[in-house]
Image 1 (cartoon, helix red, strand yellow):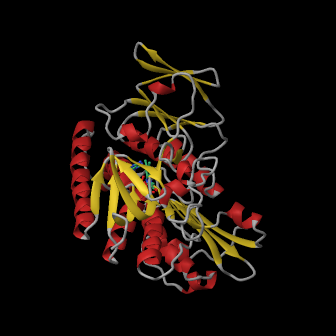
Image 2 (spheres, protein in one colour; image 1 turned 30 degrees about the vertical axis):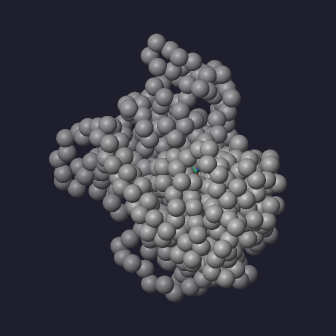
Length: 450
Ligand SMILES: Cc1cc2nc3c(=O)[nH]c(=O)nc-3n(C[C@H](O)[C@H](O)[C@H](O)COP(=O)(O)OP(=O)(O)OC[C@H]3O[C@@H](n4cnc5c(N)ncnc54)[C@H](O)[C@@H]3O)c2cc1C
């Protein structure tokens, strides 16, 4: 008999924690998971899922406009925020139940409440102590807010999913993917949206052609993008909130969404007391095997601050369970992780950006195509799709693929498999396209633009 209550105690039932808990249990470990909020974590409750449902909701307004050119007679549609939020909540409750079933089905004990470490083998939840041979920190991240005067009047992505009323006028502060996605969501629902970002262009880290194309397209849809601009203060006004910017303007709005990034959720967990080293940003320092500086304490997911995406947290949870309880030492390969931004139009991306490839010293061929997608020849919408291939001239290997346009996330998932398999430009060229699609452009670009 082990001297511990559990073989593995997981703190946080989000993407990474649930995967690690249930896989470990399926390999025969005795597992508990503590969750202070709702099962499924950020992705299910306050991230990917509700966000994507809201993206779908917001896209119907442009679909209705586009339908006219195809012969439809569409009354100007109206949108009811409360219906969407209620339907979205119902779906999330269903998913919470599925997560409970997945955990209980593999014999994982769910412990409700906030967990803290009292020593390297003991976790306290609501006054009760549990011991475990191995502890896994999978506590995710939380939104970061800058301390400008009046910041308490702003909301974060955590709150926007539960607002009672649609903000008809909104300022979004930030330039990351969450800021861009909510700008599109609210704009599609008919709100007036101003996005304020301190840098010269949003989506730092994405390919420059992607960034400029999306900025152009968002402006065409009526989103007011203010770059090189700071929010200096937020005050209550007669009519909502008054947002003062560094350009000397005052924007009158109903809500300010602060989307200025996320920090690892490790504060007050008792990690330092158990000898676990944290970075300056509060991320748990781990080695390749996700082991912290205290050998029986591991960490995965957003709280280790590598790539903050659900499929990455899932892969880390899987690798850890394989290593610890299936006698199969596993790591995660972080190269060519594809991702999407569910902006309108969306972005899909995998591999190196042109700037990253040049900085790494590659001699490059760049293939780029910008065209009006077929659907808009009749809809009349002035929207361009942009596709780009970054190719290493000396080996012909495709180093990066980027797209802004309809279904970019869906298309890039397939392309990511090709890159993972080491596809060269010649492989792309030998591939026969699917006609008529936008995606076929990826296999028909023949002449480098640079
Ligand atoms: C608005 C938004 C949109 C996003 N969209 C996407 C997307 O489209 N695609 C994508 O791949 N990723 C997206 N993400 C990121 C994705 O949600 C995260 O990368 C993913 O959820 C990380 O999983 P995790 O297991 O590390 O942490 P989380 O899913 O955050 O889970 C951590 C869990 O730990 C719990 N917890 C924290 N502290 C304690 C404690 N002391 N005791 C008990 N429980 C605790 C939390 O309540 C939470 O449930 C989005 C994130 C946000 C905020």
